[in-house]
Length: 406
Ligand SMILES: Cc1cc2nc3c(=O)[nH]c(=O)nc-3n(C[C@H](O)[C@H](O)[C@H](O)COP(=O)(O)OP(=O)(O)OC[C@H]3O[C@@H](n4cnc5c(N)ncnc54)[C@H](O)[C@@H]3O)c2cc1C
View 1 (cartoon, rainbow, N blue to C red):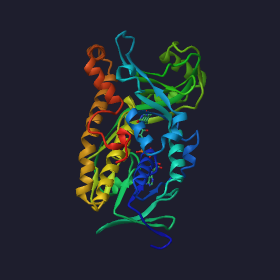
View 2: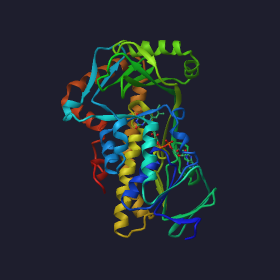
View 3: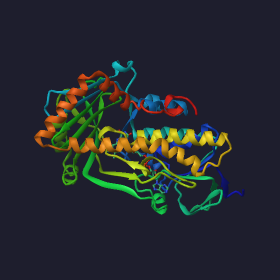
View 4: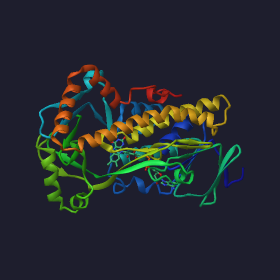
């Protein structure tokens, strides 16, 4: 190979949260990777780039421990020990108490930019991880035994497999002609951060209000992240409010249980859509993360599903490499698809159902869901099942999600 030609085990297109996690996970198992991203990744670390915070499940945290990223994350992690779900003014509520599953946190909150910074810092110290950003594919071909990609910067990459981790609009998915079911929820997720007088006690609140779900998520210090789902038609008007008027609206939904509130971050608005690819793999090609599936953030599952994809794909590829199999063969890649697509499909159906159920104000539907919440709260095995699901601890777990290398 010449200076501007590099042979690796996997080319990953998209260095977002999922692409960078995959690159690190493969490299710690001795597989060499090249990550290509169109963005200047240093700008994606700026506070103004992404206001989102992510709730990551306990199992995803174990993966970050196993691949050596947790050391960078521990001091910016906010544990979630309790989740309380309420529906409007109904006194019936669902309470997930971490004590009931051994007292371990149910998950952790992070600012997305902190997750990105930790992944970038670890990547810089990872042998066999080659980052090309900002750069882009200008040409790529799938030939016998290999994929060849040419980057705008002149680099040529050769590998048995290319993985698309470019997020929801994935151009590679389109070029491969893989169809995707998609629709818009006609809702926007408005996100921001507030400081409050009283401590949040590591508790996350999800409130299902008549105009949409309103999540209050604990962050380090006396701060909470807000995810306020509004009708798309109302989004621009809410984004246009003065800070004082915006905080008055937030205050009405937040309540006064944590004392006086102060806006401590800008607001961002994200259109909320659904997408799910018809299939995830072709010969020498795989989809991962939001490029494969995107859900409503009603239960904060999007990145968590991407982390589960990473764990499964890593295990499949590492085992194939040990057996000397072709990493880009359909025989190998179908194992990843069989492992992940049913779980992602089931979660997509549940998230979509919840979104419709909790965006509905018909009296019979409201009454039924309130009874449902109260029932789940009272039936211990059902409640434990939902809590273990929130922790990402159900189903056949790949080694990384148990905190072990594959
Ligand atoms: C309001 C909101 C709240 C959310 N809250 C949560 C939560 O609490 N928990 C959770 O688990 N999930 C949450 N999610 C979902 C989560 O943010 C996404 O699932 C996650 O960011 C997907 O990561 P990704 O790496 O697959 O895609 P992306 O984050 O979209 O990254 C894609 C990367 O690919 C790059 N790229 C794009 N096109 C190209 C190209 N042609 N060539 C090269 N590179 C390219 C981009 O620059 C980017 O770096 C939330 C989403 C929203 C909208």
